[in-house]
Structures are given as C-alpha cells and as structure tokens.
Length: 91
Image (cartoon, rainbow, N blue to C red; front, side, top):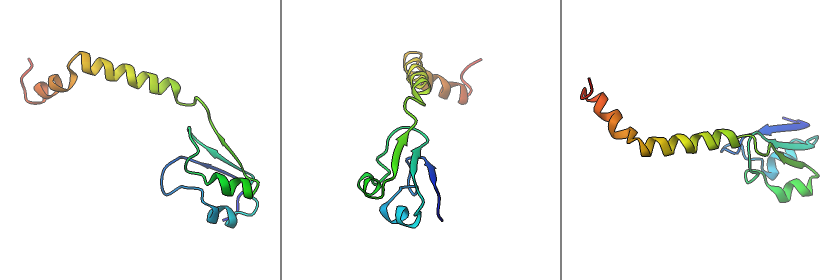
C-alpha cells in the first residue's frame, strides 16, 4: 500500500522497515503517535528521504499521573487492602 504519511505506534508489528518504505514510494513522513522512533529504520528513512517525527511530551501528564497513583497505591497499602475486600474481610 502506498502512502504519503504513516502514523504509527511503537509496537510490533508496526515497525517501519526499509522494506515497507520501499513499498510506499510516495512516503514523505513517518509520525509516531507517542514518543520514540526506535521502531523506524532511521538509516532507511534518511536514504529514502522520509522525515521521522514524534509527538513530543504527548503523554507527559498521564505518565506523571500514573507515577503519583503508583506512589499512593504503595503508601496506602492498596494491593493487600484490595485483596482483603475481595476475600470478604472488610465491613
């Protein structure tokens, strides 16, 4: 399939390989819907004049929220307390 733009996530099997770039002769830009570009063959992108971009800081807030919630879960003993509730030990 030929495309001018590819928007992908950095997860297998969506790697943008040289073989896929050769099939998309009109490809001009490969954008990561997230951060990182290790799923794109950067050498092949340079060779084929394909711009590689990412949405920088797109998930910074959600990562910070996740870290805060993990800290709260550890500090408040969430997992053992949850298991107590599941086992019927809370009233």
